[in-house]
Every structure is written in C-alpha cells, then in structure tokens.
Length: 117
Image 1 (cartoon, rainbow, N blue to C red):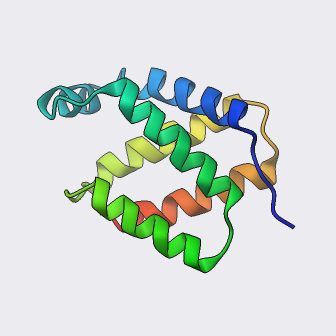
Image 2 (cartoon, rainbow, N blue to C red):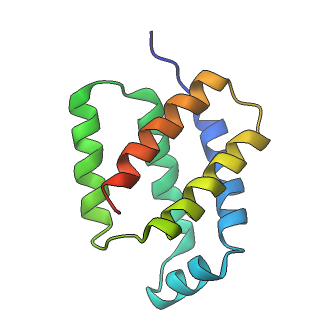
C-alpha cells in the first residue's frame, strides 16, 4: 500500500521549508549568484515532492535520479547538503504529518541527495 501526502500539504511543506532555508546565508548567496527564480524553484519543488510521495516503483526512482542530476549540474558540499536536509526535516517535524510519510519522504530525499554530494 502506498502512503501519500496530498498536494495541499506538499505546498505547505515547500512554503515553510523555503521560509527557513532563505534565512541561511549560504543559500541566500547561492540563489542570488545563480539568479534563481525562487517562485519557480518552489513550484518545481512542489511537483517533485508530490511525485516522490506518490510514486513507489524502482523505475520512478531512477527517473527521479535522472531529473535531480539534470537540474543540479553541480555537486553539493556535504555540509551544505546537511543544512538543506536538516531544514527539511525540521520543517516536516513542525507539521502534522504521519510518521510513515515523513520517514518515506526523508529516505527518498536522502537517497537523491547522495547523488549530488
């Protein structure tokens, strides 16, 4: 049985996450240097996270890896990845989310994050 998270909660997660992440000087600077459109980034993140929580097959996982590598043509330093991941976990912990959903999503994100480090 697949455990999913509705689009409304995904949208809330992304909004809350970027509220926190955009207080970190490294990410503020990186986004400015790369001229990142934050609203576009959030939109893509909403879609991506929704797919992560609704798709379970290994083929989907390989597709996610390809998309992550395509969108992130750079490697991420382990300490920066840790900031990103801890911010995401903190955001999830502050929300009313089923523990199974959190564990599933964190596991998938951590797996994909290793592909960028």
